[in-house]
Length: 77
Image 1 (cartoon, one colour):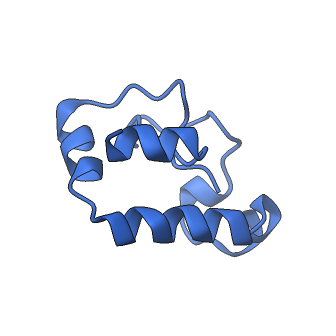
Image 2 (image 1 turned 90 degrees about the vertical axis):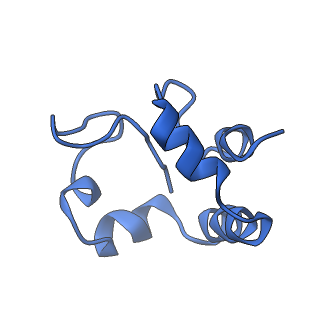
């Protein structure tokens, strides 16, 4: 399974995300250790923690909603 599949299965990438080839290449270029770290962090941090503490516009936008300038990739914590 490629990294996109692993992160989708782990719930980090939305199953409805429509990734372009550049995004797929970026995610699939992550090392096994990086993918494992993302999955581990997701399992340890609650969504409430991320919403309270993550900086940037994505932190306050409801899940599934994105600004026109944001990529279609959805990483969910």
